[in-house]
Length: 168
Image (cartoon, rainbow, N blue to C red; front, side, top):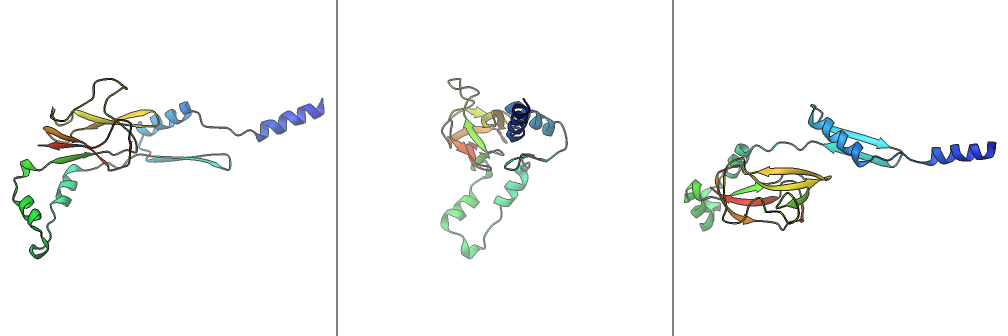
């Protein structure tokens, strides 16, 4: 009897607690509802999970960074032509702030958010990135026409990767 009890205690001590998907969802909800920017959870000696909020991207700052010009002697003919083109003719890449799986529609087989040639308005959802079974919607930063869909549905995406290109 004592041997069985010792065996059960050793087995219980040997078991490691694992984070369930509901535990992870609870942590994500906690982060969204608070000012916490990063959480690191250690479960046992070899299991570690770190969750970080993505840094917001300021579209205006990115536009100004793209406007830095090279000295005249370093510009090529195409750079000069692009600089002379009106700003309205420039296309705007819509980039992801997440790492995950690119989704063109809410569910597989559903109508895509946008297609090439569609007219979109600022704030309209143009794509989604699935991360940890959560769908993160990506909005259009400007009014315009979709001229390119850079990825195929279900393709892995990295932070800052272009998903859609819009011509204002």
